[in-house]
Image 1 (cartoon, rainbow, N blue to C red):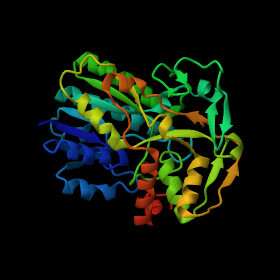
Image 2 (cartoon, rainbow, N blue to C red):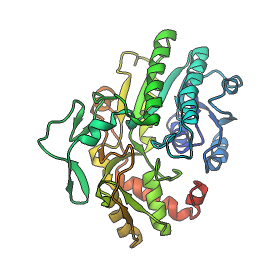
Image 3 (spheres, helix red, strand yellow):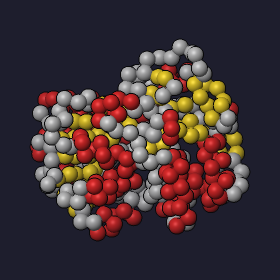
Length: 357
């Protein structure tokens, strides 16, 4: 059976993929590497070890930390600083961001070269150019923005969302730039050293057990904060909370990952978008309405001024993944939100565990 390494395995995405892959393929052998730097990541360690997963405490930025790792058939790279504000927010240096997201990728690719292992990068929707996305005209429709019908749109943008044809020209944020560079390096390594590479550009990933932060786990952060009556604010775009993103549960990636790690898929397109799509899209105001109906009233403040890199409407168009792989998300946004809320109720100290309490 296949042997697989997951980097960042004790994070939300890595641990969810590990559990879901084991459930889908009971004979698979999974190894994981994690530096446990993220508050709350330690909570996943015992559960994964109890599932028989061998964990290595290491930092992907350190080449020497790959030396003890066993030879595997595939690597899924789920280790990254996933915040679009990283490197400019005063909490993380730009150099640390680049070292983690880019130097770490280089070390992983060198490991893949040594093992002749395939490589799957969990990339991001934030590789797409900010300026044309921000310039697209939007209008309120209920409590959410939508693209103004009939306007001329740049290539790769439609009411279905952003496709792989959309521009990746900077600026895309320092975070987005490290992911674009990682994508290019991965594809070059794969061609140069003859191992398969897949790039999965994911939208907002969300589900129970996510370490909710306002800059990277917004659905979990919002629901947990609402339940605890913690301060919440609509930031930018008039301060109404109409900005829209789509949500995808990481476990919905597993059927695609199984196909990508199977034989006979070498000629497929290397880069695909994966997200909840228009059906799983929601604004912050709509999320507040959901929280209000489920958990009672709560006051949300307003800051009309927008932040750098904020975008009013960003939804992933996953038509290519459906066409090539037969993939589409299986978990609806209502189920994702309910899962997060139930987890929040069962874990009253989750925000503190996430390091933002």
